[in-house]
Image (tube, rainbow, N blue to C red; front, top):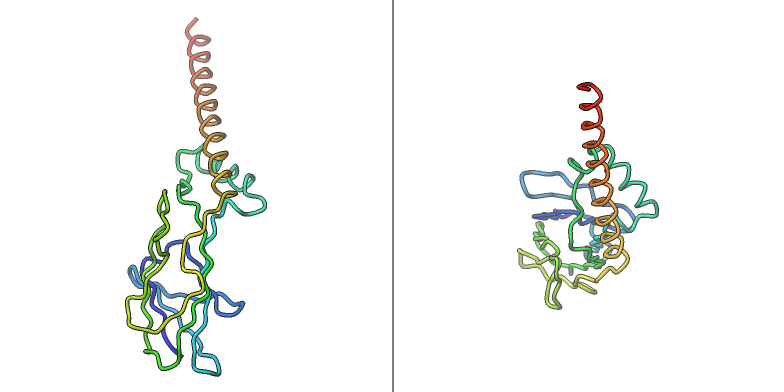
Length: 172
């Protein structure tokens, strides 16, 4: 059994087989135990998907927007909507500690951007280590931003009008 140490994990998900890896957090490092297969190799998958790709994304956004006091305390969705799907294979005879550093996605991705780098010297093989553009999440983020900005302004105007009308009714 080996230890996988991930720095700056962010919203990446790690799977070994079909089971997600369970990480323990210590500062900015996340540690998980990974199993070796019968050949002594370690295989796992690194995924990153925007939550705007979920089937009921609009209802979830609307619920969080209302619970977040009409957008004031609502978390902002990152401008980078790129996805990552990468299968990693670490060859036999590796170290007991495998260290990875996760690079955050950028708003404007460029062809040479890597989602992660290995900070320890391990012979690792990745099938597609790159950020893939996700047009569905990008379009949904634009829709979300536009709709909820308009809704926030409408709620603000209605609230302001309500306060003004109540003020004039009480003082006249």
